[in-house]
Length: 207
Image (cartoon, rainbow, N blue to C red; front, side):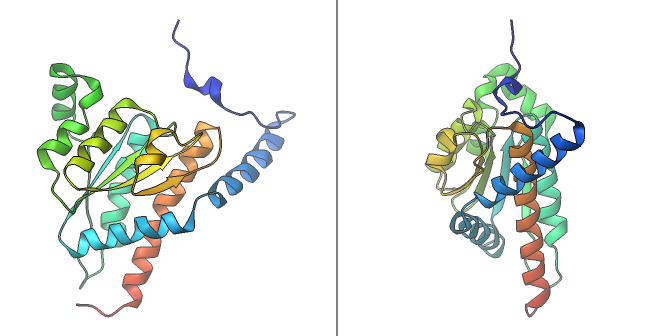
């Protein structure tokens, strides 16, 4: 029998839906606060330097994290665009369904991201790897492939952080055992970076 991973979720006050919401909001705030500002600064610098150097940002995630990856690519590119500044070029590694499914079918699902990093990645590019558990095999393999090609790795993780928190160059680890809150925090971090970069660009002189 297949067991959905949601059984790993810490539960909240379920005396009413309102109580659940209040408890959820409190835990989300604490989870966001747990993320290291030092690591966030590293991620922000990697993002801006990649754009300045004409490099690409590749993003990988499964399930809800794949949806976050797609949203991230939109907001980090369009949401930070400012005339006179370099465009941040971000690409989700699950967006090309034909290529993604061909790799999964012909090789294995575990290498759907690492194979694309081998195809496309160049030294100085950035890999943003998103995994709530931090242990998704295809995410870990993607990071290993990225390291082998000298890409900078930003890791978004939760729960215990897993392997991803340990091997990332910038580890955005969210300390909470709940998939919903981990994903909400990852989404918030994505928006924080996009809005911060956009604000800095709006305030700085154009090239």
